[in-house]
Image 1 (cartoon, helix red, strand yellow):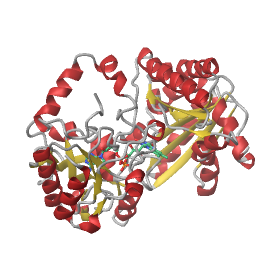
Image 2 (image 1 turned 30 degrees about the vertical axis):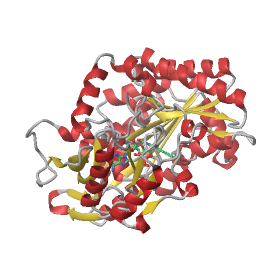
Image 3 (image 1 turned 180 degrees about the horizontal axis):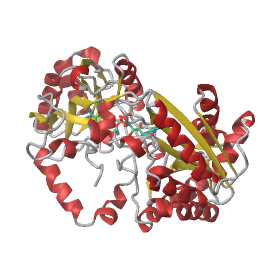
Image 4 (image 1 turned 60 degrees about the vertical axis):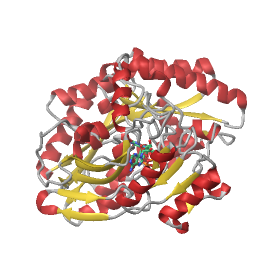
Length: 466
Ligand SMILES: Cc1cc2nc3c(=O)[nH]c(=O)nc-3n(C[C@H](O)[C@H](O)[C@H](O)COP(=O)(O)OP(=O)(O)OC[C@H]3O[C@@H](n4cnc5c(N)ncnc54)[C@H](O)[C@@H]3O)c2cc1C
């Protein structure tokens, strides 16, 4: 169908002020945070900003009748090209539909529209001493709808898990224009095992099954106390061994982060005043809970880490905790600054491996990086084996681009070889689609058949996931 006609029709459905048609505006929607979409940007036919379920339904029905692709989008912070119209289509920008409908503090839950920003939600919940635990690094930008679609998590997943654990129910518009309610969307109970679990199916579905228009989230009581321990190791293998021993002592920290020598170097280059000790690895443990529990966990971590670490420090003092954590919090920025003529790219930095293989994985990534002549900075959520590799290249240099693409391909293969996964948190999108068969085998055919039930014409975010 003619692009101009589609734009005119959408204006009739939602009004001129909520449709973008100008080429310059559309260009903004041709990429997300992934390197791949910056290499190959694809503009949509139009962008719409629906503000009600009925508007979404009308747009979907129109697209269904005319067989036009639909691509839901939150804040576009995704790192896999998930919200890009790679085969043309209409982008539904849901970021401005950001209503917190109800905080039901009595029942420990909250009802939101998809565009609510993660950090804003937690600011609101804090008034009730509640919080929504998954904590992506993009918290101040990403939307709850995008988090649900990507099953996002963060450094506290080790204790609190991923987004899926907190979704009580969803309102969604399927690709045929049906409005359905999954799980406990219309209830207020916390336990609910009634029916096939469509909520779980939708969480992490990356926009290929339908558009999430309402989310009922479970909240948790906000812990009162917090403490940070930093342990410095001369041997890389001592880091995962220490993590395992902490678990074996019955302690579940809220976060366990690793910086390897490349990340330590990058941080010290970027902000020398942080003065991270020169070492093979640094572990940062965060514990939270009630004050005596936090103190006990901290003392135990100090004792256990002290068996192998060159130095260990434990603190519950807010200023000292911020200082200890600063190295980790600037790592991503530091990686982006280590070359004057280059930058960090998001191209495949999110593999997940078993804890017992973390050290081998980091060594293998370093060897691969040397082989392809690409500088990398390694860090990650070691508590759940989620390794982030930040390649740093000059994106204007075609040779460097070619080499980095080979490197990230090898890193994805390495993840599978290590009995891990190509993605621990950022999702599949376009970037990891080539590994679907390798990772899931025949199960991919069943995924495709499930998609057909929700989306018989294949118009919902095509080209993603599988
Ligand atoms: C600096 C930085 C740090 C990050 N840190 C983390 C991290 O720690 N952990 C982590 O998990 N991720 C992280 N990410 C990745 C990203 O922020 C998350 O995946 C986030 O959940 C994406 O949300 P978004 O609103 O930007 O979604 P988008 O990027 O707009 O979309 C992501 C996917 O969700 C789909 N989608 C969006 N909204 C809807 C909807 N309402 N209905 C159906 N489908 C929808 C899109 O089609 C797309 O497939 C980071 C990204 C950046 C840039």
